[in-house]
Length: 323
Image (cartoon, rainbow, N blue to C red; front, side):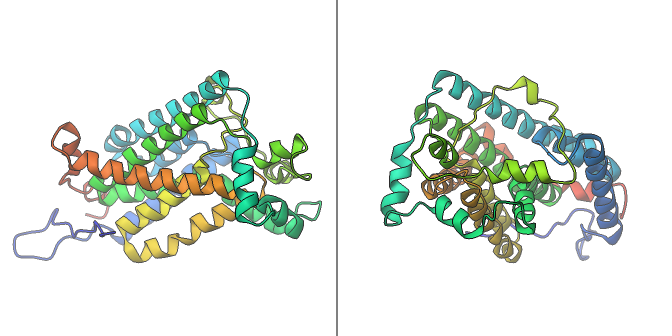
């Protein structure tokens, strides 16, 4: 995968070195404003940071940097796209409420020689009470709603063209997921356990959330979308975390290598929590890779989307501080 990093020439005089984008003052303002936005949201609404809440959180550093108009212009389509996905996911369940239980379960049983990974991992790690590592993995599980937009915000500050490809990719992967939820509604391992198809599995994510010291409040849009209690294939926790690694590799390769740990940790968590089979993860990876490839092809083709290829001035170069 070729890196899309490119040095900026914004603000540089002819014949001189490019002006630095990430000045100390800009970094300090960015970090402090983010902490204020994140802390304020947690105090007001709890630790469940849904996409709509996170849009507001990231608006705080955008305002502090003086680039909030561009942020709203470029991130509002992301929030609208994710909201539409949430609604379509619920519609899929409304139209196909009875899920499939066996095909993806049998895949894991065959591949792992009769063993079912969620059952095996819970036998290893679940003690009957919430341990410290359950809290750590619970936070990681909820980072599904935090890490992708945070990374996309950092990418947007420096490279709008890459951000646009990431935007199309993550919304496209979400819509692909919603279509699959309709065509192949699939039950997660905990649901198969409730039906007696598997030994008892604990919904560790729910138990950990109840035991957390800070409780989550309701999302701004929670009452506006239809629920889907299953939505197991593909695993969008997998798709999003895989895309985080892909976006990071495309932005800064060395940083991307470090971020490859994130999807692996997420895959382990969703198996341990009884939310997904390994087969769900494989489909999620396939959806992520296809969406990234398709977004690149769409932007590269002549037409209106080709304008998203840039070049653009980095939004961070327009920040009112650190000039």
